[in-house]
Image (tube, rainbow, N blue to C red; front, side, top):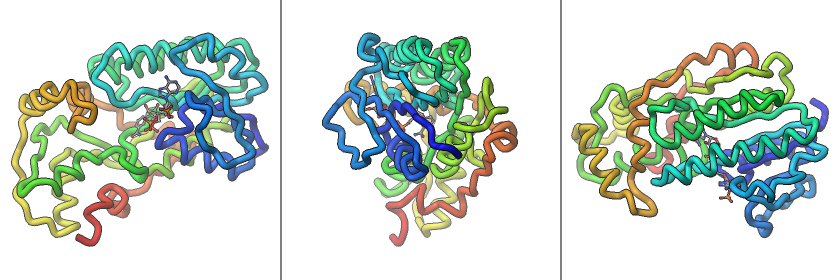
Length: 299
Ligand SMILES: NC(=O)c1ccc[n+]([C@@H]2O[C@H](COP(=O)([O-])OP(=O)(O)OC[C@H]3O[C@@H](n4cnc5c(N)ncnc54)[C@H](OP(=O)(O)O)[C@@H]3O)[C@@H](O)[C@H]2O)c1
C-alpha cells in the first residue's frame, strides 16, 4: 500500500492508540485531532491538530491535504443523553462539514453494531452519526464493531469484574443479553484494508466476532476454563436497570443506564460483506480467552 496522509480522530483512545501505532509502522503520515496539545506521541510522522468535535470553528482546515479520514473519536460512556448527542452526532456533523471543504479520498466512520435508535442514547447518537456520514456526499464507509477485546479496560471488563469480585457470580439472566466479542487485531486489520479497498466505498460493515454468546454462556466458559467454582446468581433486567439508575450520578458506575437497552437490543451478526471486501476473518474467542479475562489467568 502506498503511503497516505491520514487524519485520525480519537487517536488517544483505546482502539485509536493501537491503530495509530500500526499506521505509523506502515509508513503513513498522520494528523491527529487532539483536545490537549500536550498529548505525547513519539513519532515524527504525526502532526497534532488541536480541536474539539463540539467546537465547529476549531475544526476549520483539519482535512487540508488529507487522503483518508479515520473518525474514531466519540463519547463512549456517559449518563448524559445530551453529551452523547453533542459529541457523537453533532460532533460528526461538524467534522463532515470541514471535510467537505477538501477533496478527501474517503471518510471512514467507526459506528457501532448497536446503532439502533431504540438501544439507548449512545446507540441513538451512533445511529444519527451513521446517517449523517451516509448522506454527506463524501466517499465514505462505515465500520460497525461489536465488543472489542485485547485492549486495556475494554469490552467485557464488567463480566470479568463480576466473575471475581463476589463469592457468587451475578449473571444477567435474559437470553436477549448477548455479545459477539471481537479481537482488536481483527478490527485493525479490517480498518487497514478499508483504507484501500475500492469496492468497500459506500458500504456498512458489521465487524462482530465469529459467534454470539449470552452473558451466562460467557460466564460459564470462563468458569470452566479457569476452574472457578462459584454459583451463578441470575440477575433480572429490572434489578440491573435499578442498579444503573441508582448509580446515575456516579463517575464510574458498574453499568451506565444506556448500556442496559444496548445489551438487550437485537444486533446484526452478518459479517459476510466484511469477509468478502475487508479480508475479515475474526479469530475464535475460545482461543483468546486470556485476553478477554486477563485477571483470571493463572488464579
Ligand atoms: N471499544 C469498543 O468495544 C467499541 C465497540 C464498538 C464501537 N466502538 C467505536 O470505536 C471508536 C473508538 O472506541 P474506543 O473504545 O477506542 O474509544 P475511547 O477509548 O473512549 O476513546 C475515545 C476517543 O475520542 C476522543 N474524544 C472524545 N470526545 C471528543 C471531543 N469532543 N473532541 C475530540 N475528541 C474527542 C477521546 O479523546 P481524549 O483523549 O481527548 O479524551 C479519545 O481519543 C469509537 O467511535 C467507539 O464508539 C468501540
